[in-house]
Each structure stands twice: as structure tokens, then as C-alpha cells.
Amino acid sequence: MLNDLIEIIVHTDDALLALVAENILLAYSVLFLIIMLETGLIVFPFLPGDGLLFSAGVVAASTDLNVWILLIALMIAATIGNIVNYYVGKLLGERFKQSNNYFVKNYLIKHLPKAQEFYDKHGERAIIFGRFLPIVRTYIPFLAGVVSMEKQLFIKNTIFGAVAWISIFLLLGFFVGEIPWVKNNYGLIFIGLIIITLLPLVFSVFKKIKN
Image 1 (cartoon, rainbow, N blue to C red):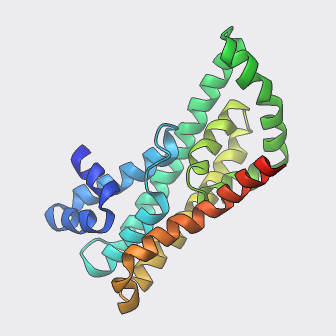
Image 2: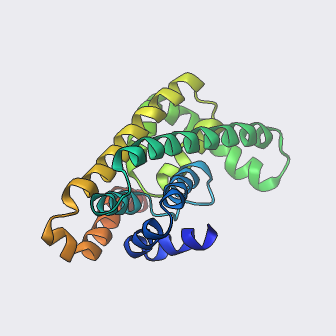
């Protein structure tokens, strides 16, 4: 499965087609795992979330991969990932507060009040809309756990965010994937999706540096 996962990251559309042709149950499992890992562990922000969902939709339109099974499975994966990430953050947050480590005390703990203020003010929107920002979506649930965001509120917005994110990108790929122009320019569209979803993050960083 590890080789399949790496192939999908590097050659998303071709690897997915090959995997579906070889073993459709494995294809569901690998897609589930990638989405869960990207949202569930802070060491996997590089996994191809948006592009992968679009690709999965395109592949489902022309193979035996059932888009509706995939839709439900990936919503569950995205929800589980966020919840796991939240609890990891909650566990480590308590340890951070009790730590005597110089870096933790002078850099992490120092910024926790700001993070707490942010989640108190924007937490619900951050959990939902953060889904659409590559890299950021991996860290938002973790930090929500670190600052102990109210659990029920977090889970509710995690589900809303997962439903919106998975539905938009997966179904977009499924319904437009068979259009000839999309087929002929798939690589360009894949790169374009990555750039478009990264733009808000780049703009935010640039604005902060400028100020």
C-alpha cells in the first residue's frame, strides 16, 4: 500500500487509474488513508488533498469507482482525521504547558494566548473554511486541540467542513471530468487547483511580511 500511496502523490491520475484497474477495494482504501492522514497528522501537510479529490472524481466518471461510495468514505476520512488531530493537539497542549523546554516556553507557550483569542473569535469559520487551504487545514484542528476549543463545537464544524470540501472537489471532478477540454488539459487544471487554493495563504504571508 505504501508504494501505491507514493505513486498517487507523484502521478495522481495515472496511478489512480492503474490502481482502480488492479484492485478497486485497495483504491478506496488508499484514497481514504491519504485524506485521513493529510487532515489527521501534522507531519503530512504535503499530501495532495484538493487535486486528489478532483482526480478521484475524474477517475470515478470513467471507471468502476463509485463516486457516491467514495463521497461518503472520504467525508468520514476527513472527519476522523480532524478529530484525531484535535485530540493529539489537546494531549500535546497539556504537555506544552507543563514543559520546561526553552523552545516550548519561549516560543510556543508565548503565542498560545493569541491562538486562544483567534479560536475564541474565529474558531467555527476557521474549522470550516480552513478545509480549503492546503497545509493550513492540517494544522487548524491540531491548534484547536492545543487551545482546547470546545469539543462539540469543533466536531460540528469539522463535519460541515468535511462535507463541503469533499463534495465540491470530488463532484466537480466527476461532473466535468468527461468534458474533452478538461481531459486534454488535465495536468494544467491539476496545477491550477493547487495554485488557486494556495493563493490565500501566500497572500496572507506576504501581507504579514509587508507589515
